Length: 363
Image 1 (cartoon, rainbow, N blue to C red):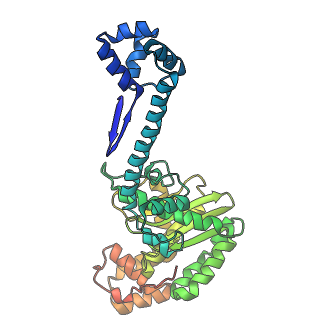
Image 2 (image 1 turned 90 degrees about the horizontal axis):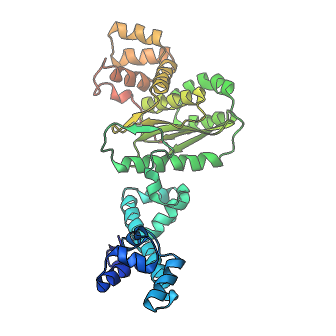
Image 3 (image 1 turned 30 degrees about the vertical axis):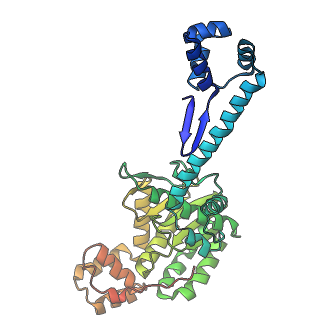
């Protein structure tokens, strides 16, 4: 195209004027090309705006029409500048659309960006924080997250916000000072971590952070970012440091601990080249199904050993008293047992919810 229009902006390629001159001369493009001393292909590409005007052709045009070479070169320069303005405006409009998908206040509240009402400043601040050149980078399939869409019409909100949340966790995790990673240490601490289900968050969180730090794990606990669809993630900084991130959306004791042990298993799997995500969004499908299933089974077994669970459900006696007695026997929070019974459909989701403690976690 030798003329590009967007909103009030118009960019005229030198070929636009050359085409007019050919028409005024009432000759064919091939005849014009012969007179100019170039190929017909060159003239065709010029008049259609597919190639830039070269210095040589500008010189030939100036001689052919008795004009200055500078005039032709200025036409090309003017077009280039106006074209960049149009591209910038198109990109800006696209960026503004993506900005509307992101809860900017989320990042303001966490003191990661400055508060502003100006859209350009918001875009600039978010790009600097995410370390990307433009927000549309968050839409790239090969950036950060290992998942695929369960439908062809995957909502852009999920894509953008999942990567925004993950990049936030990575930024925080990379800055944490931790010991070199030790799988054996982490495995040794699992029984102690399990015992924390009987403690309150203000008691277990400081100790949990200490344990993870000693084991080479940057433990990041973030608020839930609307439309992110992520419950947790594990990603490796290098062979000596891994980031385990959770959000506070899963605030009930059963879901919190299941999610935590699920991610711990991903750490123990030591897939250094993968970023493993736990999704809540139905629009996204986990690509590493075997790793996910392994992590689920690990979390289930740690929290409620299979043999103990089978013996309990065999009684079919799921009263509040019996459930609490079973939880006491295996030294686990009763809410964890209730969550498992509900998930496995032994009881309805409306039953025994008074035993499911909701955590208030300061992140």
